[in-house]
Length: 344
Image (cartoon, rainbow, N blue to C red; front, top):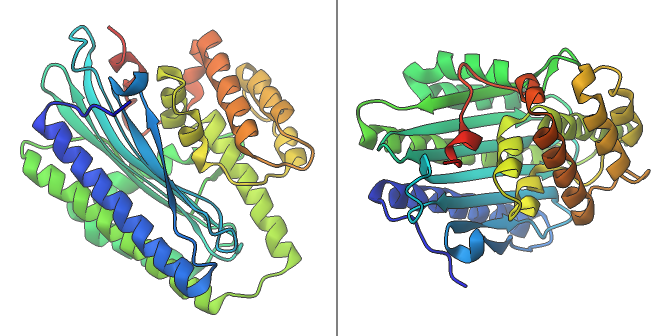
């Protein structure tokens, strides 16, 4: 079967944008693999929504196990051109997370998407956050300087929403050290909005690759304690994604045809004992969810593909049965209506 693209020009342009960013990022990371790793390129994996009738997507997965813990660069486009009763016409996104192996190298998360509604309204979601296991002030300053230059007058609003979205109330800390998030972003100039999304994506990708290469050159050595810090931070990352991240939950609730891709952000190993200790900290309504997550993971803390699929099903099942628990999930200044958009 073949993936059928959305028919609107705006959606086609968004797909061109996200694919260009995807290929740019993969190419630059492949160059790092050639210079500093096993010289193994990212591999493309395809998936289809309803056998391609309603779109699908691709993800580039890292194959260099010396340089990357896990790394995935996902592009998707879901549309309902043949289902006029749906509120959503199309949703096009790039969502990527890179977890390096070396605990002194920071992880990165980037998400850029365009949602087009049936009534002709459309809006962007633009996110970027730097996630080091071991903080480095130079990396943080370089990342934040790039964010400021790329976002210009949107900087204060993006940082404000990002700080809110990536805060973990039960642990009284953030996921990551630098956060930018614009939800429901649009102006009266769609061309300018498109250019902003493209320029922001290119700039953040280039900045991160520069940070990563400098860190590879300067921080090759690390200790057992560094690895322990990374394991604990990866546990925090998984915890935030599976209990608070509204984008992940919405993706799982809308359909089950790309669970492996949606779970591509999860690191390879976590500290199961640490995760278990957080059950008592979450709101009562979420305790059973975290208990179920812990039960899916082996004592070694391995997050392999089978574990990812079990985790996806547990999150989906929990929120289908406990819709009121969605109020505890993260948000910027507005809560996206992603799930409702896919309904009639």
